Length: 112
Image 1: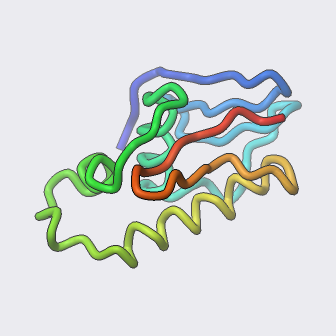
Image 2: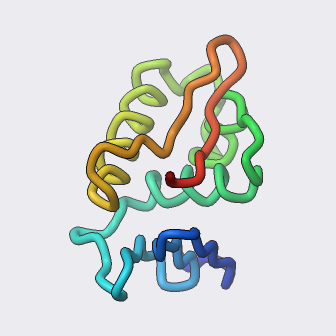
């Protein structure tokens, strides 16, 4: 599944390249293996929120657009968030790029 040519550059040389579906570290090295389609779709939705919070319902709609929202379990969403968080830590050890806002949703943070 190809994405739009949206790309986000961060101040410390990391970027998400949605056209290439790659997570790119400083120096041009990509995180390998690549993110799964679900992980990358969630990352793109978070990026497009521009620092805003996206709800679980919005995550489900973005990642599983053809699924009945009531058919997607909390565990599936939690597992996806956990796996994406682990993969993003490959970019910069000790940096957590995802912030859970209790009762509201999830947001993508800029690196320090």
